[in-house]
Length: 319
Length: 145
Image 1 (spheres, helix red, strand yellow):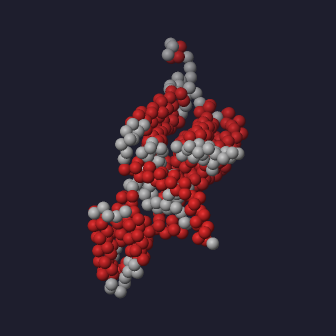
Image 2: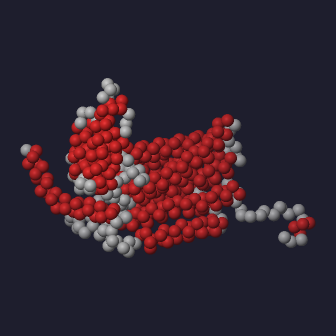
């Protein structure tokens, strides 16, 4: 601040950094986001490395066991990279005055984000179908036995009409409840091995009164039938080779936390891109929108960056 | 904004580089894996899992660098980028290192948990199974005939 600046018609003093405030804010926000996701990823790596067996070998469940679909992850990587490229193009086109082209690319980004979520949903549905969910996975044989018996118990609480419509329903229900209680007693007396439980589940599934309900309600039966059909050995890495997955819950927690938070960011990206698209369709974009699109692009590239690390770490690396 | 026209070509190049990198990391998934303690047959390539991990993560870092430098324009930004990104990078790297001594290194793994025992039992079954695989194959054929 010299004296001359007061008297001369000097250009107004520009305070702060030479970048728009909105862009600075976006970068500061991304700084916090980097710490959030690196904390998640860092924790995952440490937990995964610490999941060992008694000999100290790594014992993290394999992709086959946890139903990881590598091609879906790779396809999603491509979708995000392509959409990142489209954002860059769109920003450039709007800054240049090619508003229609810019809008078209923004619309394509929106479609890519939806496609990503669709593929993610397909993966999630596979996990849900196989009950690969945090806290639901039996990690020891004893837990697998307990789960099968609990599922038989759950079948026994179905409405009577589910078993039979001609009035015999409640009798069938009582019979199944008795079977369930028998199994619970055996469990308490520690008389059930995994083979014995399997044999009893198969017997119940053969029963004409409640067999169908057992077949659809007890996962042990499902795993068993697929294993028999595909002739897999109980000691192989096949997803249907055994009823328990050591460290399965830790895997599921890590998987759903990381990909879930990432998916939330994709949804937020949809909201961010919705506004310029709406404006473009109703009123048309103008030069002033280039800055918004650049900021939105920075956010979207960050979402892409996170996936670039999640893809190899979850789907490919085996350490 | 005047320099934006010249970026057109770079964006395409970066996009294709990212595609190639993605294909490479997907390819690493189908690389033959060398089982610990076993020698690969002569003339057969096999990679140990840490080697694959390093390859795949190096590719991820290369992809991330491409995205940050060109798509996020960091290559053309001024010095503020260092001030802004240095603390967050240090904290991000420091966090897993801070967790490592407690969780990562199992000092007491000779006093195993139930899950560790189950994991080991599977492992032992697996090794046992491998020894008898030949025998089992033959008996299967005999049944088929």
